[in-house]
Image (cartoon, rainbow, N blue to C red; front, top):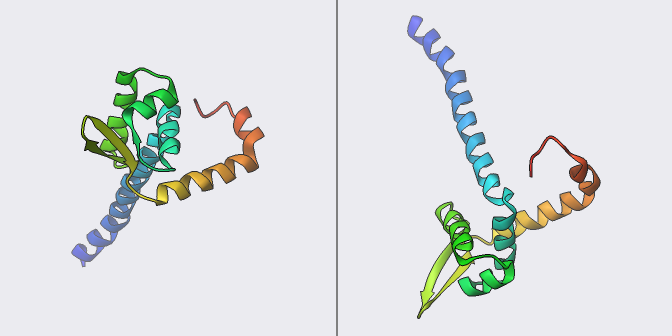
Length: 123
C-alpha cells in the first residue's frame, strides 16, 4: 500500500518536471527566432538556399557576426550547410519553419499595435 501511495505522489511531480522541460525546450526553440538577425536570416532562406556571401550582403553585417548567427541556427537545427566549391550554402532544414513564420506573420498582423506597445517583452 505504501509503495502504491509513493508512486501516486511521484507521478504528478514527474509529469510536471517533464512538462517544465518541454516548456523550456519550446521557449529555447522560439528564442532562436526571437533574435532579429536570426529571424532575418531564416526569412531570407525561406525562398531557398543562399550562400554566406548572399546572406552577408542581404543583412549588411560583418561576416563574423553573420557566421556566429548561422552557427547558432545550425546548432539548433533550423538550418544546415553544404559546401559547393569555395562557397557554403545554407538552407532551412524543415519546410514547417516556413509555416511557423506564416502563422507568426498573421498573428502579428492581427495584433501589431498591441505588440508594438508591449513593454513587458524586451526586444
